Image 1 (cartoon, one colour):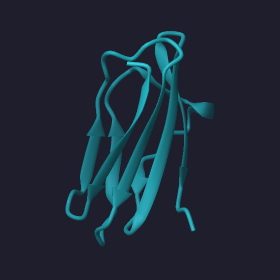
Image 2 (spheres, one colour; image 1 turned 90 degrees about the vertical axis):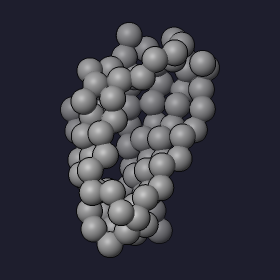
Image 3 (tube, helix red, strand yellow; image 1 turned 180 degrees about the horizontal axis):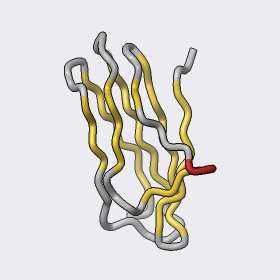
Image 4 (cartoon, helix red, strand yellow; image 1 turned 135 degrees about the horizontal axis):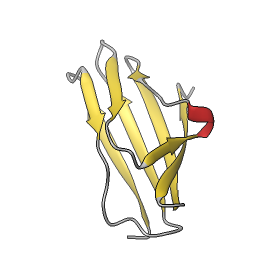
Length: 88
């Protein structure tokens, strides 16, 4: 599809694995909002090869009571990603 926002919220998961996606179109923009409402860290892993992060820096943890937002655009056969965390 051409774009969407996905929200993930958990208070009890300690590991989250994000795999390759299907159906994205060239130029499509996508957003993942990952919210940890629990009291423990969530380890974040990207098992797919489609995700390319700016400067090679991937988010790897979602802190307790925190949000990580990953913005992506489809280009060059991959999802080009940037991310931000700890909004206040």
